[in-house]
Length: 144
Image 1: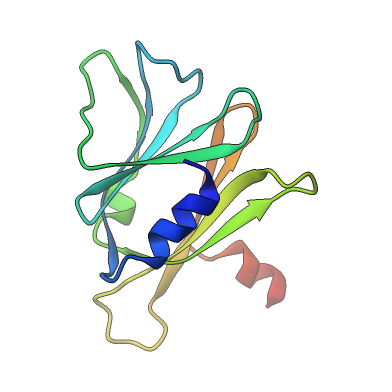
Image 2 (image 1 turned 180 degrees about the vertical axis):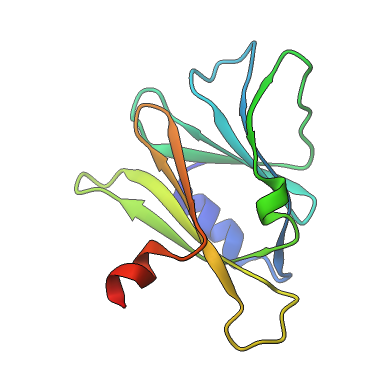
């Protein structure tokens, strides 16, 4: 699924987007050359991967996902992001119109404070999928 279709999917979600699980995984027997980022949100799996032909980030929405014993879990971020919610989602588009990445604002949906911002998760497609989580958002650092 192209990222534009993913944004259409997000617009139709009415419930809060709570993260239940988060992994970066390399499949042992797969058509994917690069690792995938798997985010379980509201009991649905969002699988982000790099399109090897265009180097563009793509996503699949699946009702279930099984990690096989031969798959390698590169990183498990569940302890960092579990039970936090995804706020605004941004596409990172290059000058050729390809979607190179996606940026998610992460917030503490259980917090009663006005500023319940937790961090920013960025997924970037550059000969494989790259990721960065900033607890103190880099955007905030630049803008003061």
